[in-house]
Image 1 (cartoon, rainbow, N blue to C red):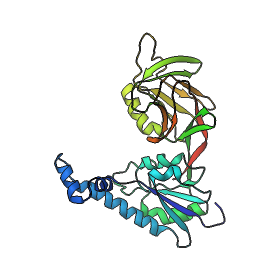
Image 2: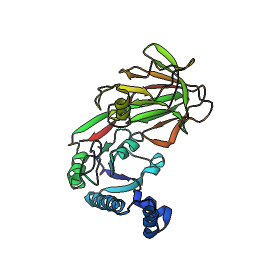
Image 3: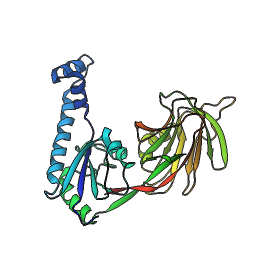
Image 4: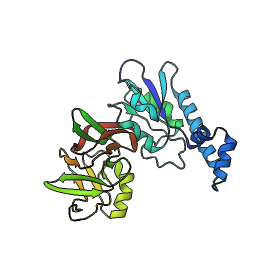
Length: 297
């Protein structure tokens, strides 16, 4: 850390309750909308209140002589992080994954507003622990887990990072057509898209794929390896499914060549709005990145 006092960047996302109010104007109208569908608003209010209290407590935990700024998830791609920042996402595990690709070594302290129901993989700390964690982070006196990330490069300086997974496919989830090259083999595939997952990602979306396909990989979050999965590859006269899953070894590449006429995309960690074009002829080189997420544990 710098000799200057750190800046704390609080990151959050809109709650379901806030989104309902934005769409329907008032609580009463939102409640009526849900009631016509056999749903209740009270659970959403509780989660919204937990989030609000956690954000307030997080702001109060920041030393008075430090600066801070609050950023919404949808603004991350436009926000300028600095080397002296300590990043505090307040929310679910996915929020940590959403911001990872925008960072370059800054320490991340994931805070859950609801420790009882949270998985606690990435947002593992209660807000009560935040004052001590911030002081420790400022003095490099915390345990840090350097979680691996995967990177896709498509030429001309275009690249995309992911903490959990990269998705290669069609933006409307039509069939994706591409040529995959792995381990000296090559295959044309037509599938629901290709996923490349880190050790962190193997606890998320990729876990459901492994459960459904019975293709399992053991990769730790800090390991410089990754796994890839073709989602529902369709065997036909021209397309195959022999390279349906595999591992990307340390210092190795997976090559994915698009055969999608238009609408092909590569996006990271579920953020579809921030993508690389992946139309016909675009070739992506995928590997484990040199960059890592510095997660305070």
